[in-house]
Image (cartoon, rainbow, N blue to C red; front, side):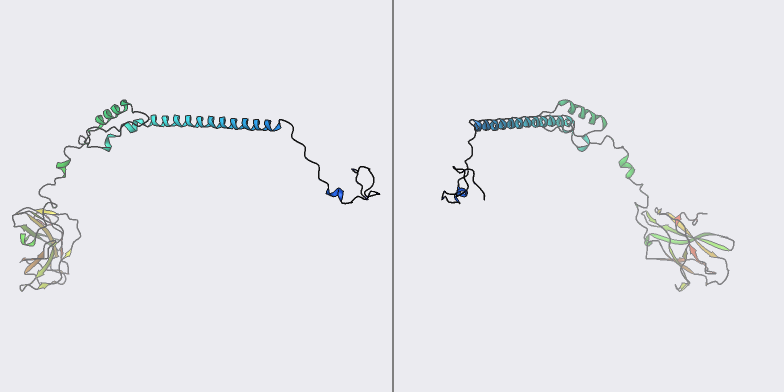
Length: 286
């Protein structure tokens, strides 16, 4: 049996007393002790001191950040002042002098960089940029008056055609076909003609002439000037076609033709023509 030592008589529970055995379980717990005098005041004073220290530390940090920002802005502005005050003269070639922007709100530009930049730009090139141009630039673009680029292509109606001289050797025959500018204006021809042999009735004999591979360039014909090419055949070898009575030529770049008198024989299927060159002695000139 469990006893209760706090009973007044110190005896066992319920012995000879008639008390309720549940009464000890329903007793109120003992009360808490009161705080010592003055403890709450000390706590409040310590809390107030901590708040003051935190406020002072925050103000000091803000002052340090503000001072660093002012120093950084001043350093960056001082290093970049030359570029802001004096832009390169090449950015504005048509102005008489480089323009100077207005002073910034926090600091005014020094006049020395502006003077130096103006002197430097004036010494290297003019404000308009014309001093460095070579005086002969415009004349060199003008082509000579008698070049292929300055003259039109010769039309068939401006030309006359004829067989000129010739040459022979090692069984080959060479005849010179000459075109002459009979108009009053200059013109040019470039490359190969189209050439066919005709009989007396104007019917074509055989195939047109083949092109002999050669380099060529435009040739200018002044009024009365001539160009020529070389017709190559063989001298009565193998099978020969009838000799031509006339020749038909298509000048380079033209669809109109010229018919003129000329006797050429195509033997052994060799009938070639060269591109035109200046002169009347064939290509290459003899």
